[in-house]
Length: 248
Image 1 (cartoon, rainbow, N blue to C red):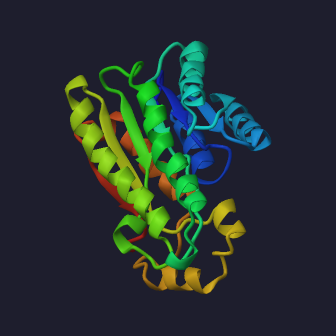
Image 2: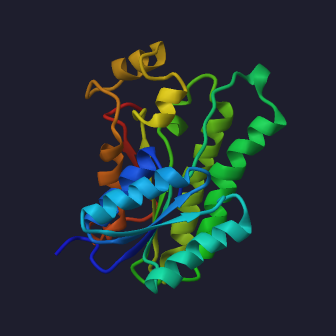
């Protein structure tokens, strides 16, 4: 039997990149998956089509995680469609590099509204439905350890995610709900291509500081997420698993 047979999972920001890989990996292990998207319905529909073509179950659900009503709607859709909720993967995130001289209020709020407030709002909605054995996985980043220049706002959001992971592990532990994070290093996605990281000096630096000698792929992160979502990690909570090929 697959590790997640009978489970229901919500993955936020799952229309592409790491989120799409996580949704597909959870479905491959038997979970029914809600594929959330903020703007790319076509991308989410493609993820759902790939999952169903492989024999899995998935639906696409739109919603802006930084809006309380949308966050609740994402979770409600999972319960209405599949009757329960067992796994939440808080993957939605935005990132833009900016030196201290260029930081604006809009830059700050864009990042914190999605990366931090969004995580809190979706989790708030989810805990009403998660029962004993439930698992929350927050997608953080190794930047909270390596603190690269030009990333003060983005890195601050991921430091907040790590802190929230620890707090909620203690808060929800008595209800037997586990909360962990996976902290990727640089990963090749549509986003890192669009941002110009792939093929850049930054990528070369990332590879040079990674003991395993390459940047990550979405599946590298998805497999760690499956572990944290499953009973294989039943004795783990409040942990931040760095999935970076050794870069830190």
